[in-house]
Length: 317
Image (cartoon, rainbow, N blue to C red):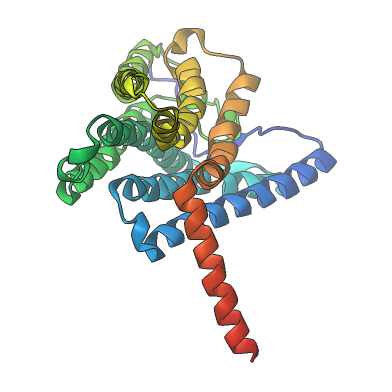
């Protein structure tokens, strides 16, 4: 299609989850509570790691990064979604839509790479426990964290630029809860084959490659655990990885289902539910998973509460 008759939209209309007012109010209350729990949960995880010297290890350094990513990801989508639940005109300016796509896509990519880094950390802890602190030294941890943030950000910048260079003509209704990549690409009034190829390539680089690294790490971890003779030793080694493995299963599954085959993508409703899963449920569940399934975090919670109780008692007297 030629570009002579094309016009560029200045804003998009997000159709969201429902047009019924009562339903929107109920959804507003539910997602507001969920968002507050997400922010507080991740804040307390970071605070605990900061305050407890026993948690100043590579594993919890990466967990701090994961919590920051989760809060940032939720913040890139949920506040705008909450505002639209109460708005009659559910518009988002062109620039704001591009910014939302950049941050949400970038933070998602950062999380996938970060989970692969955390899998390597667990591999070293289980397979080379005596050399763990030598291998996972501070310099390496910082470089791995920087690699996660840079790779996700660069990929997001490229995808955002090539997506918003597409002429949208008069198509401005996004049938989604946010400016999600596939939903925006579908608005283009030109052939988007090159964009679909770019999505496929980035999915392989930032989704399937980290996923394969996670699989390789856990193959080695499981192989090492099976060689441990004592039941107690195997149980301890498994608990070292249980929280991370749970988060990996939650995060990678739906992303692969959504992005690895953009030509045969799921229905619009499925895409909305998947986006809600990543923007609302995953950031809320991650701190809970690491709190419930991790003895060191539970111990830090108890110590923090005891200290808080002691301070409160002194102030009361």
